Length: 110
Image (cartoon, rainbow, N blue to C red):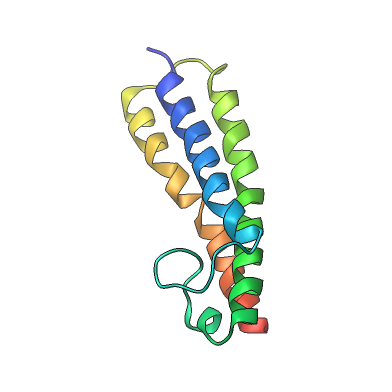
């Protein structure tokens, strides 16, 4: 067995997180109910929307870099057991928790 599946999951997830964050970072997404950091504070004004989404996007991008690097490192580690592979494949979604929490607290400060 190899770690290619887990590595590709981490690398692909990080690239997807970054790709979806860039339009928010560049303030290309207007206030909407589908895409962006959708918390009540971000809907108070256009200024709040752009500030919160820019900050959240930056946090996601910053946290995606170690996720990407972890995926690369996994390529060089000894093969994982099947149980470890299953657990590791679902962890990239948990990688979003810190940036979301940091963004929530940032929004409270505004």
